[in-house]
Every structure is written in structure tokens, then in C-alpha cells.
Image 1: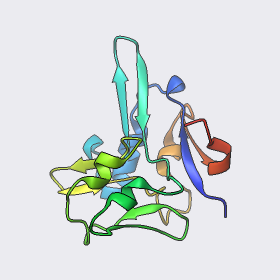
Image 2: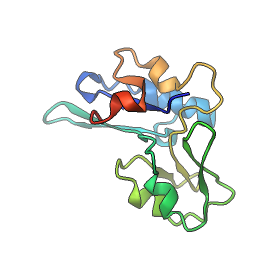
Image 3: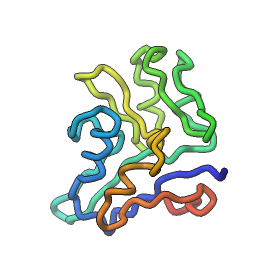
Image 4: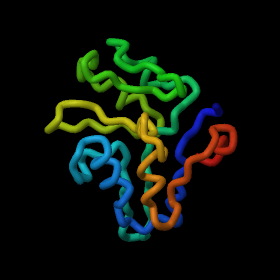
Length: 146
């Protein structure tokens, strides 16, 4: 199986935030933008969007930076945060080159895309995006496009 990542195409995003709401519902059981494992932000002056989501690096800097070894690769090669081992130091978040790890203060934990591990339909954010601003691609196909 070829490694996957989500290719974000902010130029066609329409800020419906369905991706963030579906993400939080799937992972946390509630629709909350603050519980999404991704972030869509907007520059209203230019009406442009930035989509920050984990790019599932070949050698994840977040994993290397974690002093507690709380981040490990699953069988798909996706870096997963183990909440029980995490010491909440923020090293993962501060070293992520994509600014794709979020801290949720209310839950006191770090949130990172896991490509919806275990979900038969793949990442829910990709499935619900009405304009295909998020596309699941092979890592080899996305090199240089992120």
C-alpha cells in the first residue's frame, strides 16, 4: 500500500467548514471547530484560504521532537499521538513545518490528522468537501504540490 496524504487546494475552498465539523464529529463525537484535526483559516481582505493539515512526512519532525516518544508510526506510516504517553510539552506542535498540530485547551491534548485511522471510507474531511478542495493522494503524486 502506497503512503497517502491529503492534498489541500485552498484556491477552490469555499469556507463551508464541513471538513472541520466532520473531522471533529468523527474523532470527538461532536461538531466543534476547535476539536478538528485540521484548520481552515481565511484572509478576508484577499478572500483567500489556508488549509493546514498534516502532510504525513516520510520522517515526521513531530515524532522526532517528542521527548516522551508519544508519537509513533502506525502500519500505514502515519504518525499517531498516544495521549496516554504525551506529556503536553508542545514540542510536536512547535516543530511541525505545516503548522498542522493543534492544542485543545479544554481537552488538554494535542490534535493531529491520522487520516481517519480505521474508517473504511478514508478521511471524512475528503468525503464531505463539496468542492473537492481536499483530495486523498499517494505521497509520490503530491511531492512538490503541498
